[in-house]
Amino acid sequence: MGRFDEFVYTLPKRYTEWGDMYANPRAYFNGNESLWNSNLRMGFSVIQHEGLTEFPHMHHAVEEYYMFSGADVTRFFDFDAEIEMWIGEDPDEMEKYVITRPTIVRIPPRMWHGPVNYKRVGKPVAFSAVYFDGELCKITRRIKGDGTVDYPYYGSSQKRCVFDKTKTCDACGRCVRDYNDDNGTFEGHPDLKFAYDWAKEIASSEPAPRSGKYDELFFEYPVEYHNYGEIYANPRGKFRGITQMPKCNFYGGFSVALKDTHMETPHIHHARDEYLWFIGSNLADPFDFDATIELYLGWSPDDMTKIVITEPTVVRVPPNMWHTPINFTNVKKPVAFFPVYPDGDWSKVVRKENERGEYEYIFEAASLRRCAFDHSKICCYCGKCKKGGGKTVGVYLYKNKPKGESKE
Image (cartoon, rainbow, N blue to C red):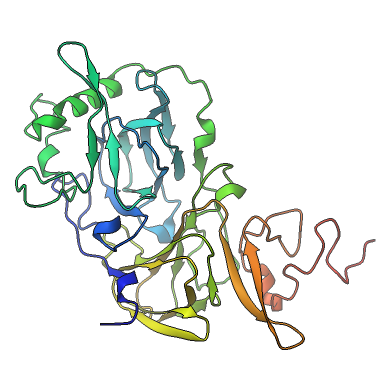
């Protein structure tokens, strides 16, 4: 057994039985079921044709983020679909939003959402739900025959397979595979029929008038280019937390390595887990993977262990664990690297040696790091300053021009 095996999870192939609506296999990380003490549940699905998914629900204490993009993240913005999503504080007055570009949606606690209707799918769409807890729970609403109301709770650790009660549900979809049928039948779980009937009713009825108060929860990814040449795919899909969406608690995005390269220096995060995804770049088949990744982990920067990854993997990095560099070697197929950080401001602590030969610990945060060429702007890690050795990064006062630069 390796020294840090408890933090490394090799992704299994998961299959859905929703017919051909979803591509198979899928890559999913199921929180505590996958790695003990994890605070993330997340996966990648690719929708191949039109259909209605999910039923209206909320999460009582945890944020969730929905991400929509092109299926092959080397072409993240190759997107051709129309997606309807309902959201609102009142389950009887949810507003409909229409998504036509790569988008991320923030869903605060106690915010009702669903269903999601893939109204038109011209090209396959990648979808991911990022949920910041080790157990996924959903609360929906049921109106009973006598007019009273209750709120069924579905927790991932309590939810059993309909066909084998000795197993937990793995969301294969077998019990609801007739959900999108137009013949009125439902051969799935009888206890869920009311929720899916409600979803169909919402999708076919007029939504509440758009108030605009939920607009801030929807963010269209900007087309972002880097200056690292042919090492990474261009443009790339990145979400930069509070610098793009105030109040959010998520920072993450794709870098797709096309060639052998290395990134980052050893650092820690003082208060948050981080989750590092390594998967194939075509999310319709994330297990189409052919590369070797070397990642270093340790509780001290002077005592780190090399982890070798050769198949789709998620690595949990707890607070105060030193990690990186990451070396991509023997890259024969594009590798999608997706770091998931459950805070809106990605921050880290690095160790540096000062002029006296002593170590200092320097705090860096995405919201504090400024562009070396225009310090009125936040750094977007485009890499332009690296061509000059990176010496200008951070060497200035916020209210002045970089040192040594003429003020004329």
